[in-house]
Length: 329
Image (tube, rainbow, N blue to C red; front, side):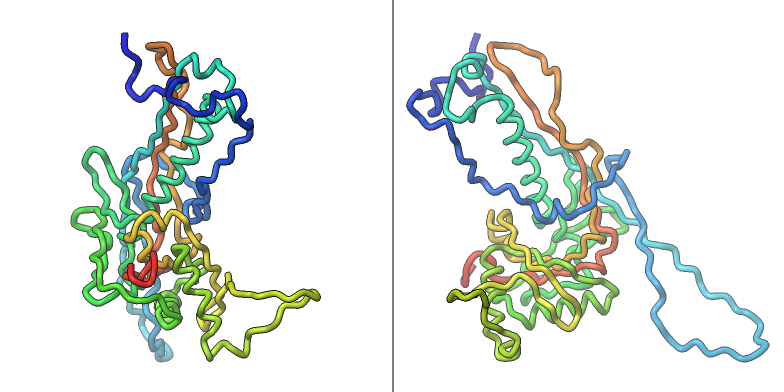
């Protein structure tokens, strides 16, 4: 009987030579900053919903002595939601491969569980960052972060907002606009939008290239008098910046390696308040146990199901349609 498709066997691997070092370096980045900053909540539905309420706009409030009361209209909160998405990674390792000695134990079952668990978390980060509308049809898709921005979005020429549609109960993808360079002026303008809407930006999450562009803001003539020399008795070149304190708050600049995956992900700088976001788990990321054994191999599955919750899109913002990979893309 033939082996299961994609089963890793000993002849396919490179780690079984007895003179190889027993140390294997895993260089794949594991950081998932947006997913990591979110509070993890639970849901019992494939379509969790929540309400968004807001205060009335401030205005004149002047009343006469002895007036009879009149009563303001009571506005009902907006009801929004998202659909859960199933995330899965699998593997199959032959019993021979599990038994033989090899460098670094890279192909061992326990290592595969760890590796696949990390990969699932990075896939969740990728899904959060993508510009993808939600879908209720099988397979369900969660609406990504880029699809929720409506109020505080600075876009290139021709760019359009996505947003939640009450009629369908789904989010729609944002329309891509003409690319432009990321600048301090764009950052300040979007932070002002968020502040005016009642939000407080805590993090600016961007691609590694955009982080390097942000560092050049130190050369702006308007901030020159805030620069200072390093102390400690050694000559030091300081060419980085991690925190930006502008007119509308102090922001931590967080580079995100996952945004280097493609130009669509890299073209957004997400201005976030972690209190406005959560990830609702229907099934936490877990190792599926007691899989049926059907051949001379051990199989494994890491699986989870959940969705992004944007508690109020007015509390976050985006600088969209920027050169995110290099000066021209």
